[in-house]
Length: 334
Image (cartoon, rainbow, N blue to C red; front, side, top):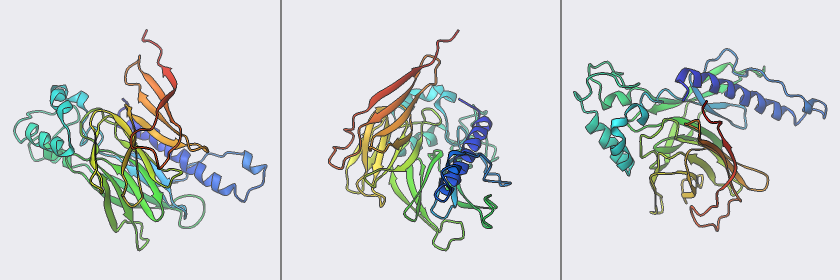
């Protein structure tokens, strides 16, 4: 895995590409045929520095929402830095159990020195579970207030995501007046009713994701609106234990999945499962869903493109067929 600094640099570059591309594609609506053939890359965020960006989305007025992480491996731990916990971790079956495990394993006085990136973050002289609550995830909003094509205003749209079991803010979507964000163990949505760039309304849409410590980065991400009007996203093999608003329990603790829900939080479903770490699910013009399943933590492992033949409201939950449409094996180590 990349170190956070390298990861942030790459994600910042990706965010700038996405923002520039979005503005170019919007401008093509009025450009002539010749102009539409030209792609110009530039930094839309200008002098603004979005710290540790992960994902971005654009609303109809051109305001950009960027999720930012400070918790990766620091507050959202990676089991590879704590291998003595593996038997406990694989036995966890809910977010509540995960929190209880942290409070027992990281009770004050148990850990005498830093381990991996787990340190005395709150400077109270003890390395314990409360150090997992210091760093918060954030969502920033960027605006181009003078219309010169470069962002010049940035606000903290939402923050305060720093419980002991909070994951990474790895996905964001604007849809129908709401900003949705995947920050395990929850799918959130936010609204800014007075247009000051700060969300004054927030609610948990659905809860119960990220049962295990597992690998850092196997989080929820890839928010998008499907052709059926539902919101889709993915989670890696940190697991799912969700009870929907209708009282149905979806328990898949040891696998990744593609998830969907109505924008108001009703009718949650596990749309497809049995993958490891699916990234960025997206639909083509025929309603087929594609995702990249990242199996590449070892040199001899795979990166798979996962394909499903279109969402239907009459499909049984988690019955979608996943085809490994393309396997790319890494070359063997020399």
